[in-house]
Amino acid sequence: MDHWTIDVMWWISAVELPCLGGLFLLIWRTRQEADSRSDVLEDRLDGGLVQTREALSAYKLEVAKSYATTGYLKDVERRLTEHLVRIEAKIDAAQGVRT
Image (tube, rainbow, N blue to C red; front, top):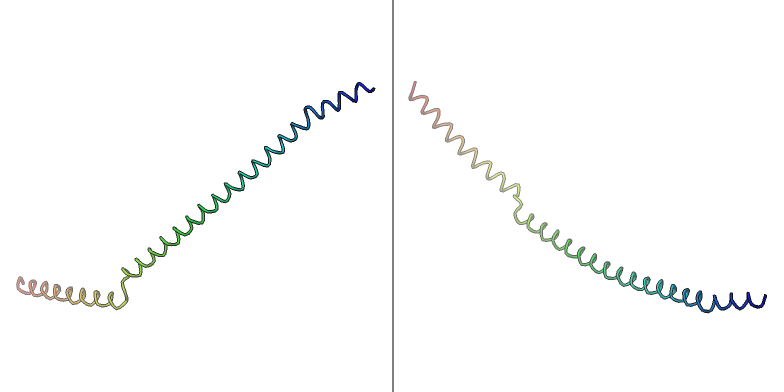
């Protein structure tokens, strides 16, 4: 039975311990890489979020600058109505001349 114990101890010390150590090292390195990649991804997302907010802010500013106010719309409506009334008067005058 002494021979069997030596073989098992040899197998554990020569094969399994280095394999487990290598596996531990592989898992540890993978974890470190994943953490660093997640940090990089988080920085990219933060940068994209900042750019998106800046673009939205610029768009809102542009809309506010080019937005037609109620007073302006009323003025345009008044001018169009006056112009249409003049056209209507000319049409009525032209029809009166024809008949």
